[in-house]
Structure formats: C-alpha cells, structure tokens
Length: 214
Image (cartoon, rainbow, N blue to C red):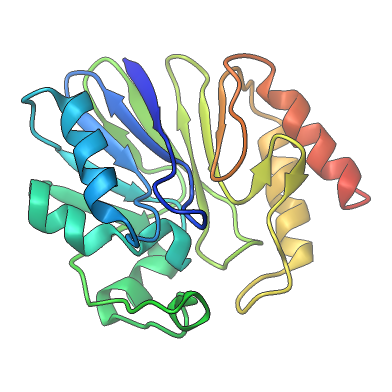
C-alpha cells in the first residue's frame, strides 16, 4: 500500500491522504474551496484507477467541505464517517459541521456509519476504526493493522491535540481517547493537520497526553 499526502489547496484545508492498494481510499476531503486543484492532484495519483472509498475522520468543514465535489467527480462506491458524525453529513447540517464558521455550505450526502472496531478491507491492508471522541463526538481514527499506521484526524497531531472547546467536543472524552491510542503500537502517524511521520507515532500520542495533563 502506498500513502500519498496531498498538498493543501487552501489555507484552511485539512491534510488529505490517498491510499493505493488493491482498492483506493481517500481520507478526508478538505474544505473544497479550491477543489479543482484537489481533484487534479487526486486524478494524477490515481493514474487512471477509480476512487473506491472515501473515509471522513470527523464532521468539521475543513475535512468534509470538498466531499460532494469529489463524489461528483470520482463516484466512489462507498463513503464513510464515524456513526455520530455521519448523521449531520447525511442531513446537510451546515451549522453542526462548522460550515457557517468557514463561510461554506454542506449539502446532504449518502454517508455510511463506521463504529468502533469496524474494518474497511482494502485488500492486503485492513483499516480498523477506532472511536476517538473528544474533538467531536463522532471522531474516529483509522489504524492499518498490517503496517501499524494511524490516521488520526484531529484527535492528536505531531505536536498537540485537537480543540476541545467546540460544539460536541469534550476534554474528558479526548483524554480517554488518547489513553486508548497510547495502548496501540503505532508506527506511521498521519494527522489531520501538520506533519506526518513514518515511524514513532506513539510519541505523538504521549506528547498529546502530556499536553492535556493526563
């Protein structure tokens, strides 16, 4: 499996990752403010392949705003998000997704639920869903059971943690989520913002725990 990190097309975009194995998976979609650039980059990496799956780490607009344009352009077979954050995406809830804060709008999308422990099988690799509420009530991380790579969304960054002062956020839940992640053997670490690393992912989680005083 190869992991490609797209260059943010907009200042406010989240990190976007494109995984290519037997199936192709896009993790998060950015704001969509400059979605033509994002689509161009995805198409270049796919190199003629189809986009099979999109997975959203949480509901916030900087991670989901480009979803509908990407669905229209690539027609992925499946789109997923954590079950507590998939509902506002199905409803097109612009306020709950912070679209109003970013000056954007969310349209309803057919997003399927992922629950804790669910596995997205992409062939030789298996992405296990880890429910990690705290930044939002439905935040998830994705853990590749083969390589030990973690796609962390905004739960934890290389040097910090996601905000816990937003609607549906909770510091107590975030601490519990970080403790859960600290028990997993993490090698590659791919957060929703900031730098990623190919080894030593557990250190980022431990730094996050120290930051929140846990």
